[in-house]
Amino acid sequence: MSFNFWLTLEEIEQLETVARDNQTDPAAVVQKIVKKTLAHWRQLEEGPVENK
Figure 1 (cartoon, rainbow, N blue to C red):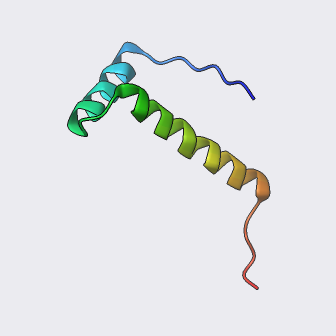
Figure 2 (cartoon, helix red, strand yellow; figure 1 turned 180 degrees about the vertical axis):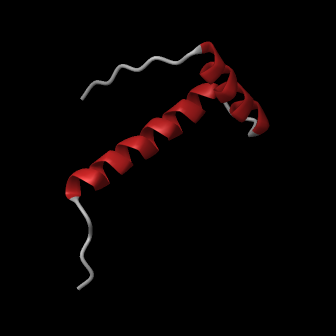
């Protein structure tokens, strides 16, 4: 699976700010965002979960 995405300079600055505030690497912030987005997309593909 392959994805391409582009960030504006403003978005990059926002990611760097989040990384600094959390004392982590900016790449780790991006990785977490991508991981959560993929999980969300998978959940949408599966559809709503029915209560049984």
